[in-house]
Length: 109
Image 1 (cartoon, rainbow, N blue to C red):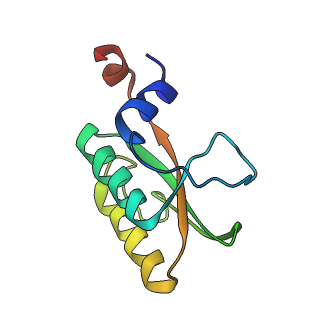
Image 2 (image 1 turned 120 degrees about the vertical axis):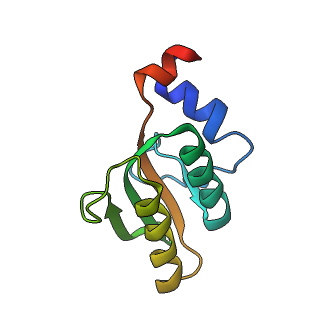
């Protein structure tokens, strides 16, 4: 199984990708509620999340990454805090992220 297949089947399933012709069609963007679900599922599977990009009206609002938080990409503290910080700054954002599914997890599928 490839990473994109895993994400579609286990992380993004049942959620609405709101990527409306942003720069990269490959990146899935979600509403605040759906993105919170993505983060819960990512934590469950132990995925790495390297960056989170928040957009407002199709324009980049802000970017956060695990290095700035001085946390490992697999540490849910950094990405749940990043989402919380974005929510406090602005409502109505949509969120995308860069993920890594470990080869060990892909091999088990």
